[in-house]
Length: 127
Image (tube, rainbow, N blue to C red; front, side):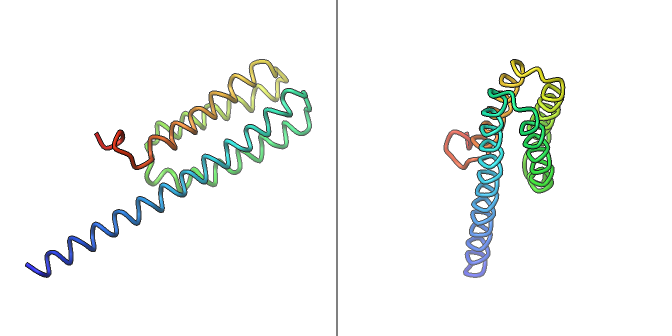
């Protein structure tokens, strides 16, 4: 009986530790991308073509990097939504249609925040 209790405690500690690590990484990735997108919003408002093109490429590169790890433990549908919104935003910026760009950018930030909230350990997410 004693061995079983030790094994159960070790398994629980491993699960909680992995949840903390994945939650911290998810928060870091979504906050970083949201910050970059909010920075992009400023340049879209100013209609600065060079900066917007440069920043959107940096955001897409960062997303590819984060997506590799996030795809291990987050639903792929959620990640595809971000990928789709970023591709659409990139096309809008290339077309220099900045009015639609801000709406699409806000949708991307919303999806990132949704992913962060959905992966957070809380009573609402358990039930």
